[in-house]
Image 1 (cartoon, helix red, strand yellow):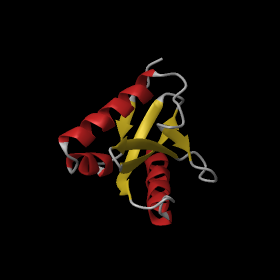
Image 2 (spheres, helix red, strand yellow):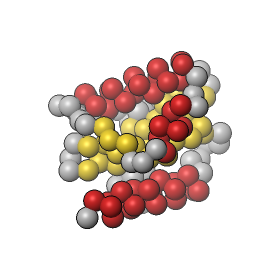
Image 3 (spheres, one colour):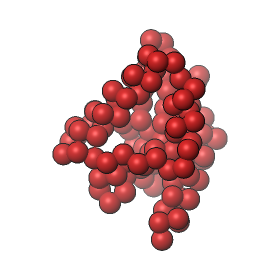
Image 4 (cartoon, one colour):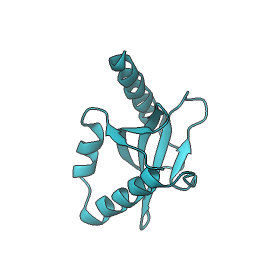
Length: 111
């Protein structure tokens, strides 16, 4: 199975461009895994409870943790939204709200 990965606007690209080469390589690795593996381990892709379809791509490099929000569209497409470096145990509510807003925007534009 191969999933197509789409980017909604430039939110992910802007986040990605700010990272150093090693973090970029890790992000590429995780995205390639999501693209090709049928059942992606929760360590790399997790559904956020109570968000109606919002997922987080989970990237770890050394002791740094990064998250990128996404959703599925028509079964195969992974649409990447905002990314951020996680500094606390819990994903910040404002980041989740931003991800939800971008997901709703994406589906509204499709109609």
